[in-house]
Image (cartoon, rainbow, N blue to C red):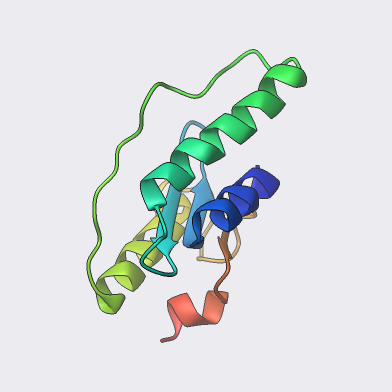
Length: 117
């Protein structure tokens, strides 16, 4: 999954301030690096890349059609949303503190830039 996220980011000029793979859903926050970046298409690419992997590996589930998305504006706002996503496993009772859950991370930005900026 991480390889597919990285590849989609690279292709669409994005980074991921945070992702969180929960047992029954996934949160991914794509942020563009420049005027030519396309966060929406990065998600489409990610699902396509990872979907092909799932199919080839014989997985018995598929990505849902479409996804929920919204626009986050401003540096402070994206950090607040990234922190909210990273705290999802704590709220769900899967761990006690942010950072303990193994399926939360960042791509293209340091964890400390998200949580201590």
